[in-house]
Length: 143
Image 1 (cartoon, rainbow, N blue to C red):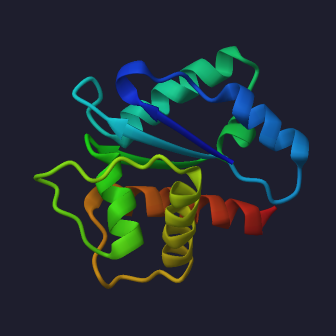
Image 2 (image 1 turned 60 degrees about the vertical axis):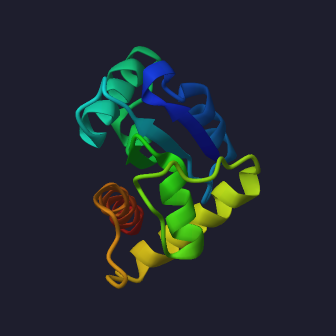
């Protein structure tokens, strides 16, 4: 399940997380978001999500099941990078209108993170997202 937002008008995806949890099994919520000038980095936005989630009776264990994929200003560029292997950050990437493209990009990121693939190097925000993905995989293996 994929939830997409921008940090300037984001809302915590608590309903989406509860839907994933109710499905059980291997359902994972991925939150894709642009981080604009109002947030310093992915950790700041993740803290904002966590603060809101706590008020909605989401536990830390449930919250830790979310995979966050954040981009600084240009999420479309990271989707483009995952789909084609290249992007030009000086120009906004093509707008993605189809959820299938986002899903396919998420799959590419997941496979890459799972295999610890280092080439070609990931842009910094995708590397942050990959660390988040690997942490989820470790927690799932531990349980």
